[in-house]
Image (cartoon, rainbow, N blue to C red; front, side, top):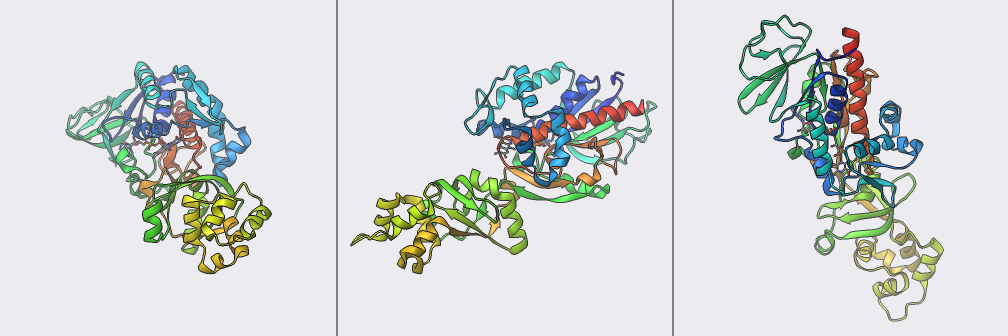
Length: 436
Ligand SMILES: Cc1cc2nc3c(=O)[nH]c(=O)nc-3n(C[C@H](O)[C@H](O)[C@H](O)COP(=O)(O)OP(=O)(O)OC[C@H]3O[C@@H](n4cnc5c(N)ncnc54)[C@H](O)[C@@H]3O)c2cc1C
């Protein structure tokens, strides 16, 4: 059955909303995409600055495990579009991809702009209409009041124009703030793809949370994910090492240690190794007020070898030059040892050796959500049907980062956002067909 007589409003032009728009327009629906910003895909373009890690090449099982206890909700999305499917999709847009040494997948050009350009051209070619600078304000009631002034029942937004004289019922009436004043738009179904709450300047500010809660939708509080953490650095350490990478180090927080690198910031630590552990670090801080991350400054050196090196007689040499010559411990790593080990540790080579393999670093707070790469929390799955429709609002679907899941960096975020967009579109199609 063609959906050509059906109008679907997609609010939010990030990767999740654009994927929903693509699938819906392919199914024949008239799709209107609304976004508060002057252009769509701003966070997607920002992701492109880091090379645009589209997805990950690892097998399905470990891939799914990245979503933790939300994996069972994400699994059906990935059955519709997994990492391989996403690569095929990019290739069909003329964007070749490659697998990096870590298994992460990037576009050949390591940029988001060419992909977004090709994608938007295809969407426009499919008849998708874009309405920029349209900030969604909420609903005028759940359903269309046919005599309501200012509603454009034809589906095209027209601020202040009364064109509501057609016999339409059961439509969702959406309100938007536009530079020309408030506009309303009527649709048979609505896809909300409003993003999380980080990097508000790119459009996703989490302002939708109270709007949905008012409608009876369960929403878990938005929290920073893939974020940095505050450390009470001494002024001396901060002034010497802020901005410096700490390379090949391992970090543990309760669970198994992970090896990688992070960066010293003016306020604490950030970077890929920190992001990988950030969910458990954040949760421990929420429970206990702070968390101690254990660093191994010499992860490639077995414990015995470190102990032998540190306890080796050093003669008249200072401990710093001893550690430098025996262990290669210099620069920021040596600075971290000075910052986090005690004076007693430095007096006792055995204690110092143990500290090099297990250096406690106290993290005080997660950095504010606006600085985070992504957001945890959001629309709770208990409030959604399997087709991602809000149980409290039939005909309204939610996709992307605004749902209550999180994942580490590595391409899992974009994959799940786009896959949920495709999955939500399938839900919309089923809903509209059932109504026909
Ligand atoms: C610096 C950075 C780098 C990243 N790099 C990667 C990466 O390499 N790989 C990866 O997988 N992920 C990466 N991410 C995460 C990824 O970009 C996001 O998870 C993804 O963009 C979320 O998609 P989304 O469509 O759900 O929401 P968004 O992309 O946030 O889009 C939401 C859209 O909704 C619009 N909107 C919000 N409220 C309203 C409203 N009231 N009315 C109208 N429009 C509204 C916004 O303007 C925005 O356009 C990165 C994120 C950041 C910040």
